[in-house]
Image (cartoon, rainbow, N blue to C red; front, side, top):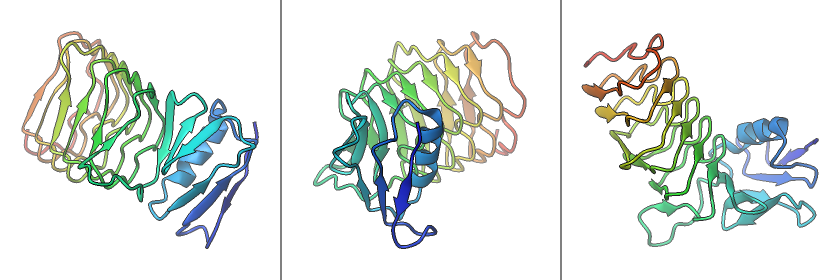
Length: 219
């Protein structure tokens, strides 16, 4: 698939973007390009033409056509009187950079299977709970989150794989306890987590990659 992204008011601080009908949620190149463009925190509007059959845009959120994939949430989305953004229950996959620079807490529901690369990077959250249904967490998925102190995993977790640097450079993170279901972790998982004082790793790990705790001065 091909794609064209039209950005208004300059590329350095875009506020509006139009995604044309030729982009599909199944195209890896298209998704990478979208993730790079969507990660601009200044965006306040994304236009999905009705001629695009692959996406749905609802109240500041882009989904795949069947709502199984959450592709992006505008940082300026209105959560009303709620204290957190609640992900639609139909979502099973959170795409790359979907919540980058997001300013609100996010509630993840049971049924989500995958958290993709950079999904929450630079988001302003103090804690996050990973549902037991999640089987994989991508590279840099929860990294560079300056306020994050706690990562919780729901009981009976099915989490199998965690990518490189997934929790890296979370300077306020204090502790983490990976579920027993985890078999594979990437390199530099906790690199740069300078406040980290306690970590529990499962005996099920296939190996201990390099730089797992590099820069963790408090351990």
